[in-house]
Length: 610
Image (cartoon, rainbow, N blue to C red; front, side, top):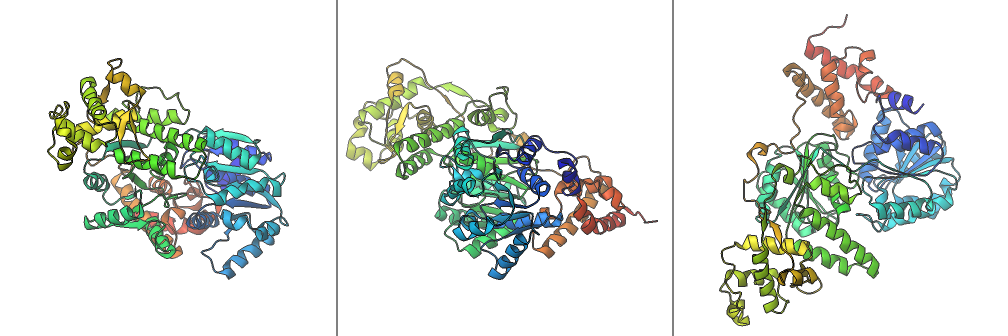
């Protein structure tokens, strides 16, 4: 029965790995926590049970735009779906409620703030609720990367709707987050379905910050004309970076919480509806963004944790085609992130966990071997082997590890001779023999280590400091002014009890990427199996899709995915029977769109109807 719905409504022949198990669990009225990679089809896991169970399914979603797009997509498939949200006039919401109360609606999408009001809960308790789905469930966990207090109230649902199965879905949840979600939503019961975290189509790249603007521009220009997301730590930097990209010919828009809701909505709509738009944003942007053709995500600052990083890069390459996740960071990022944790409201245990999570991200950034292996290992997947993925910067351009023991000892000496209270910039100046006013006023130009490291560049010394902080050889004072001091490991190194090896090539100069990848990294080329004639047909099909989408004021992928159009270009169906076999064509889309696309295929291929 589930497979029949999969074909007749959604137009797919087979379930993806991990989907049917969740579907069957919910049909058996059991709670389910599903952790599945972005783009793996989490929504189908509750949409199919919703249709089979009858009654009303409540879907909790964090963003109005996401709810609107999902409801529009379901309606095109002939599914009775609705949303009640703040973007609608009251009259529109009233009509949606009337349909739900009359039993005409199968899926009702609500934000947690609206659902968890006494008035809404009282009204819903009178209706036949058969399933509740919580999308982006990590938002309800304080251990998750995007905690939202409004989501935490969802823990009361199990008490209101006793016996109703709850589905919690997310792409990002380590063991602690999973436990927290299951405890709050299910009272510790329910089943867990972990479908893996690997997104092999996303190329992973991490660089130390050298020329931040140029490094960003290199990434964006490598994806000229393609959609991308650039993440910045602050609102001010978001605006500044947007202006910089526009000045350099990039079609960029900004998105952050300091903008008016109208402007945010306008910019998000532009990003979703048009090709080749780059959105520069704080982490306020992106949760639930369903745009399939985002070709790159670039972090201009270090994220807060591995979970946050994984969540944010997951917005790239949802269509399964090549994409890039590029991060640029520096020592100051470490200091800022440590400081944010210390400034948070939270008990010592919470702060300890957050520091450990940041430690894991730093270790990922400093990884001397396959970056993907380091990422998956963090999420408990150790069975990918250490042979390398051949799709991260380390595998494609292996770093050179050099013995830096003697230089490290010079650095440690300079730190100790200055009282273990100065930051990296001043320590590096001492080693390189800089003639600054601060050097003269502190009389540090008289130290034995002054000028002993002038043969190494400033960037090399900075890189060593950063790697020594990451390796817990040096401690970075986050509460004070960024002073560095020796840890127990640092003392052992200074005493000659251990050695220090570091990555010599962490800093890449301009144009240092391997020539074989130049201009092509993460680029999604047209399908290689299409003939020139089929490629030409595909472009006409895309034009028609865009026209239909604009008429409905919806993103193009809501009409048909690229994969569906490519399937049409290959198979060139000329009747409804053949069109029904196209990927993603269910009964409703067959009825609404078949004739339109068949006519284009017939016209462009020179076929005639008999």
